[in-house]
Image (cartoon, rainbow, N blue to C red; front, side):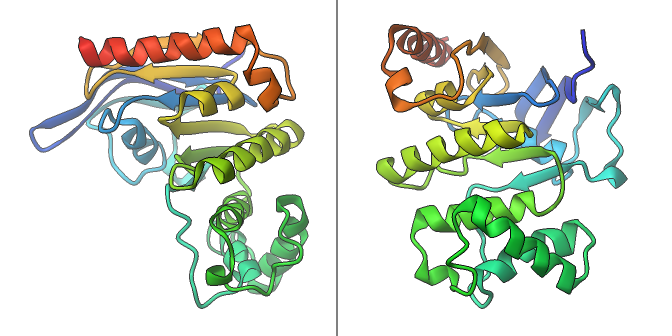
Length: 253
């Protein structure tokens, strides 16, 4: 069995008297797309905050390729829930920030990298555009390009499409499934959307209410590439039902 890219063992995290994570353990294989699904307030985003160093763990182990996580490595590229694009910068300048700040590139190198990335994200005609001129979906593409520009092959995505309307969200989910199929990053996705988890994931962890831990670990053995038509078949429907049942069982517990 291969050594996981990410392994979390016995993670505990509290904010004051509020215990958010209690003895949580999970793993993510190299090149795997893993989603963490759960109700609001269950600690999903806190897991990413601990991994990327925004919040310290109270106890537990964080391993990267089998070794204790060294913060100086900066192995993760993190994409928060909101795009956080700077309004005074163009799209290509915003994307360049990923390489400039996290990737250690010069401004010229980072801008050249950003310009090369834009076609991959469907933004080649929008490099000189300001964020306010873009739709919500295009802004999220720009934010995703900035995340990739950091030069990390492990991506931490915190509900990146949660604020979008249903049609735009579906379009971007399908787009992400396609681009991940080409690049095969290691991805941890935080979501509350059962269908999104089934569409994108190789495996899904379901968290119960705050501090109750993982209630289900579910493989998603659907063939790739995936499509909306695939989500309509009996296997996908059964997987969605199992995830929903786990979510509702956790709430009732």
